Structures are given as structure tokens and as C-alpha cells.
Image 1 (cartoon, helix red, strand yellow):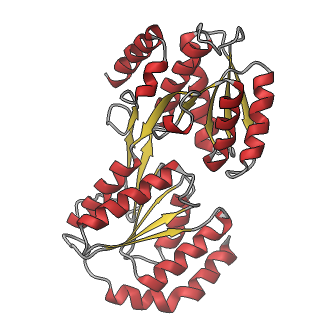
Image 2: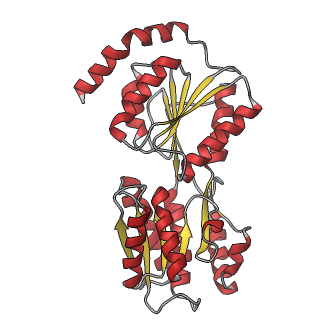
Image 3: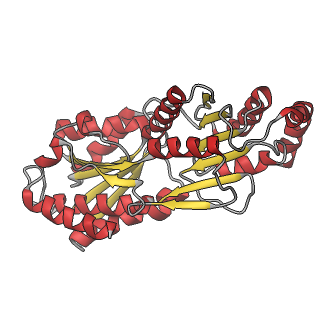
Length: 332
């Protein structure tokens, strides 16, 4: 670790000096320069698609703001050096990203780039004067999606079987998923029926839709009739299997009903696009407060459920009534 940081210092020291001498005050400026650093690829990732949409929409309305969107790929070992290099070359005022691993990377780079500020969503980190994070309360989304899955698996809907078994397919394990999202999903389901069991399985990457389909098939054969997934593009394999073999799916973060209108029975919404636009507005006006973490959930309006899609009406009226009562209690 020390060797890697030393190499970064030696590689970029001269450029950093030049950038630091020429950087302007960031407050109340229309000409700020912002890097949107995508830790992965935009296509197939709802979170990054929303980030890019928000950034592009803001850019259209604020042509003096320089916004560059950069896709860093899936190799996490390369993210820190990529970020350091692109900041050095282009002298950005701010970096916006969304990944729980980014605070450590940005903290490592902050001393090399003392005039750059880092804003990270879907992360939890405070106490650093150059870093601001926003932590989405994903356990809340997991809770209400789990509750809906529990209502469906214990219902008389056409493809619900007699077993009280739901499934969660993940691309990879990471602390937020393992410690909060998966347990909350099961907790929500057991609020519908304490006897529900969870089958949790891992693909191993974010791209292999065929592997996801294989896993979903095996889980259905073991009795799972309602699924969810945090798997990026690989989740398309789950949707294909659920459609072909008649299972149900509850979905995280976006309105995905059109992707599998028969299989998907509920969609949560993570308001990443809304947040990115608000962040950019605060950066432009100089109103951003750094060194803190803000927690955003159902009550704050950044985690929601899609009620207004016509496909939601495919759920039986009694399930919708129970679920809507549950959501109302969460908001309050």
C-alpha cells in the first residue's frame, strides 16, 4: 500500500503543484469543473445510468459547468491510479462518484490534490474536510421489498407455490449487502410470515447473465418462487428465467417493470438522478458542506416505491392494500 502511494506521489507531484497554483475559488461559480467517476460501466447499471442522466441533464441547463463522465471499468485495483491521473491531467474542482470503496480511495488522494473536493453517494464516511458522502438507507428498501416478496410467496397468486421460500441473487458480496440489505430483505419477508426462508446465492461477477440464469433455475427447483437481485447486467439472466419458468421478482433502484412485465411485481426506486442534480447545484452555488455524511432514506424522499406503473395493478387487491399500509407506516 505504501509503495503504491509513493509511486503516485512521484508520478504526479509536478502536475499537482501546477494545478494547485492555478485552481480558483470554488464558491459561487458557474464555471466549475466536475468529474463524474463511474466505478464500472454505465450500461446495465441502474445507479450509474441515473448518475449519467442527472449529470447530462444538469449540463444541458448549465452550459458553463464543465462535466466529464469517465467509466473506470470493473478492475477496482486500477481505480485509484486512474482517478489520480485524470485529475492531474484535467484539473477538476470536484469529483462525484458512487461506490462504498471510493471514500478510502479519495482519502488516499486528497493530500495529493488539496484543492479537489470529493462527493460520494452510496457510501458512509465523515470527518474529512475534502470529502462529502451520502448514505442511502438501503436496508429500508430491502425491508419493504422483502415484505412484498413475503406477501407474494404466501399468497394464492398463480405461480406462488406451497413452500415459503424466497431468493436473493448477488453479483458479489460486500459489507452493505451482506450486513444490511440481505438481512433486512429477510426481516421484511418475515414480517409477512415468520416461517419464510431465504435462499441467498452469489454469481461471482456483475456480467454473467447465463450464470445468473443457471443459479435462478437451481433455486426455483429448490422451491423459490419470488426473487430479487443486486447483480448489474447479470440480473438479466434472472429475469429471463423468471419469465420462462413463471416466478416472481421484486426489483431494486429503478422502474424495471417493462423489462419483465409478467414476472416483476414491484420496483423500488433509488433517487440517484435527483441527488446528483442537487449535488451539482450545491457545488455551483458553493453551498456544499464537506466533512459529513448525510443519510437518505424513505422519509427523506430518496428511497421510494413505484406505485404508478400499471403493472403494479397486477398484484391482487389484498396484497396491494397490505403493502401500501406498510409503506405508509415506514414514511411516517
